[in-house]
Length: 316
Image 1 (cartoon, one colour):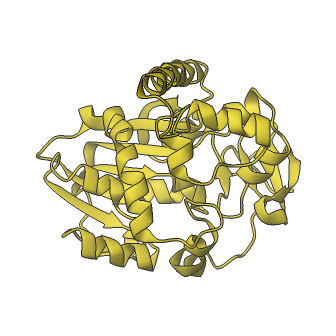
Image 2: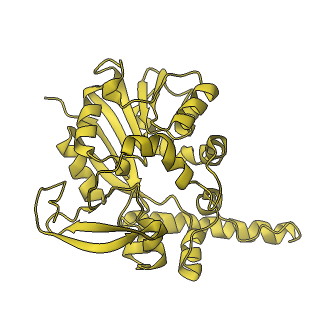
C-alpha cells in the first residue's frame, strides 16, 4: 500500500476503485491525516496535459473543448475570485498565474495590476492567450523558464494543484519565484463538498467527482498543511461556486447539468419568455436570495465546493 504523500504514514485504506468514465483506479485515504489521493502510476503527464486533457474534460457535457468558449463562459465568474484576494494586490503588483486555462482570470485583472505572466502547459490554451492578450505565456514548467527568482508579488493557481503529481515540490518551487512576503492564492475542489459530505451522493455524484486527472483531493485542512510544508503561511476557507439549483439537480436527477453557465451562473427559476415579466422577476429574485443564503450556509460549515488558500511566503 502506498504511503500517504502528506504525512508519510502507511495506515492507508482503499475507499473507492472506480473513477469517472468507469476507469479502474484505487482511491486511497490516509487514516491518520485524512488526505485522499489516487494510487500513483507512471502516466506521461506532460503529454496528457499538453494535448489530451482538454479533449476529455470540457466545460460542457459531450462537446469538444474550445478555448474561446471556455473564456466566454468563465470570464463572468471571475468577480468572486477577485473579491477573495483583491486586498493582496494593487496596480503596482507583478503577478503570475499558473495553469490559466483560457486566461480568463488574468484578463479580468488586467487593469488592476502592473504586469501579468502566465504558465499554461496546454498548448492550444497557451496559443489562445497569446492571441487574446499581449502578455508573456510560457508552456514549460516554471523551473524550465528564464523567469528570475523572487520576481513576483504574488501567484494565482486555480483548479490546478489537484493535477500536480508532486504538489509539495511544485509549491516549494513556486515559492522561489515569489518575493519575500509575497502572496499566493490557491483554489482546488473541496473533498468535503456538500454533495458528498452532507447529501451523501455516493453513487452518481461520486462517480462523476473522482476523475483521472485529479490526483489529489483536498480538504481545507490538508490544503493548508500542504501549503505550510511548501513554504507558505495562511488560512483556508471554502467557497460555493455552484448554485442552489445545481444541488437540486444532483439530488433529483443524479447527473451533472449541461454546462458551467447553468451550474454556476445566478440561478433562474423562470426563463420562459412567455411568462409575465412581473412573475418572472419576482420568482427569479426570490431564488437569487435563496442561492445567496445557501452559499453562505455551506461556507459557514466548510462544505462549499471549493477549498481556498490565501497566504504569504514565509520569511526566514
